[in-house]
Length: 306
Image 1 (cartoon, rainbow, N blue to C red):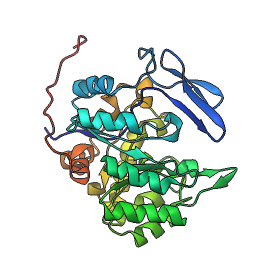
Image 2 (image 1 turned 60 degrees about the vertical axis):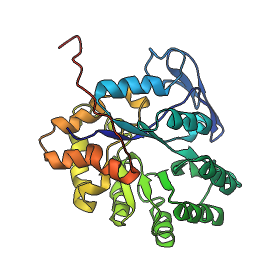
Image 3 (image 1 turned 60 degrees about the horizontal axis):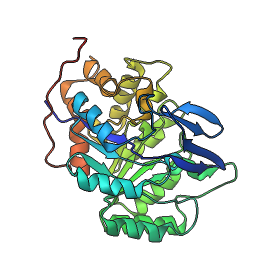
């Protein structure tokens, strides 16, 4: 059995953030105040709202997921301190991204500090940089200086982009300026939005990969077994090659609607992909890209309904 690796998941002890002037904060029973609404952010049995490494490991072990890349998002608040401890405690299970606040100047120094602390990747939720109030360009001087620093130190850029081709030209400029910078683009290019293929085509560059975190919520209207998502994976593979694509779950938000295993087994159960394509997409590509080592072999545990 090939390793299954989740290239896009989240952890936090408490949500506390303001995005575009709107508050996000943890409530109870898995709910959060989210930008003017009450949302079921995580499963209701996580009553204290703590989305911990230990709870995720229990899900990973049951679903036979060997390792996960922990990314970040401004809507969850800055989780650097917690994630550094998580990676130190579980080094063969979690690869954690640090995050800077690129919405205001001064983040270059923060990136330097995160690299010095030992983070091997830095996350930019770039879709949050395009707002009605203004825009932070990915090609501004401080940003480009940070990308050069990351390239020099072999630090991976984890990035989510705005819909379609909105930020693709900026990404092309970054790739041209920093050709050895390793980049993982999230949300499968916002696959259900017009022009998503333009984000995918960025992976025609040697060090760029696409991960599918959030693909099940993007195809939520279709729902399980997400045949449209599998066809999108096929289309993306036709554009850049299956070796450039990685599975991601967007845990824990996605498991409010489905189980964690369901966030990848629709790929395993599909007859549209070959076994080799499945093994590359679900684990081998991420294992190589992130340099993951000593991955555990997890047994299948029958549940009580079997």
